[in-house]
Image 1 (tube, rainbow, N blue to C red):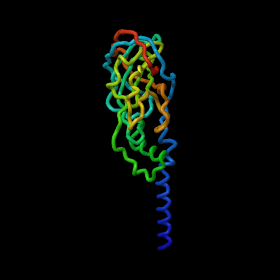
Image 2 (cartoon, rainbow, N blue to C red; image 1 turned 180 degrees about the vertical axis):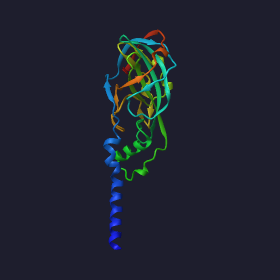
Image 3 (cartoon, rainbow, N blue to C red; image 1 turned 90 degrees about the vertical axis):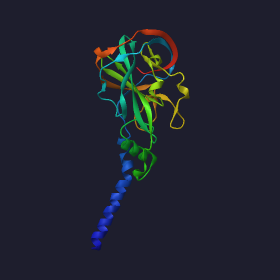
Length: 235
């Protein structure tokens, strides 16, 4: 009887070790985001055209994008011509938690990544108590069905409208005034992407994704005026 009891206790001990080590073993894959990342450079002074608001009544589907915890649907806020092509700018809210500050993957996966990086065991003590809302900015080449997706950390939809986007040799986001925006207790608002949860923010970069849109349901406006501003390229 003692022999079987010892084996049972040894089995429980091994099971406990596996459970405690799980968060560390899972770190290499659970934190990775993936995606085709392209970078356009940092903020610079840009002079070109601001176009009017757009009207889009069709669907927007990202086919092969990174795993983002989306909230609500896409909204078209600007569309215009840049570099000889028609681009539409869509925004959509994304849910982040107070542990990682990132809107990627599920709550459980973000918790597990947090535990692994912070060396917290057992991981059941990591709990998402509240949420932050960031903004996904999707710039779509309407004819080609190719999109460029970046995350506006610390930004909300009311911070973005058609007047914030400048169409020239590319599509730019006017970031003047965003220096005062903060999130997670003091982090500065910024636009970019990440390669892993809780990793460094790659400012001036975007995920290149395939997007299914309905071009015939997009109504563009006209150039309203020229603007000069400190801006980051989002396409």
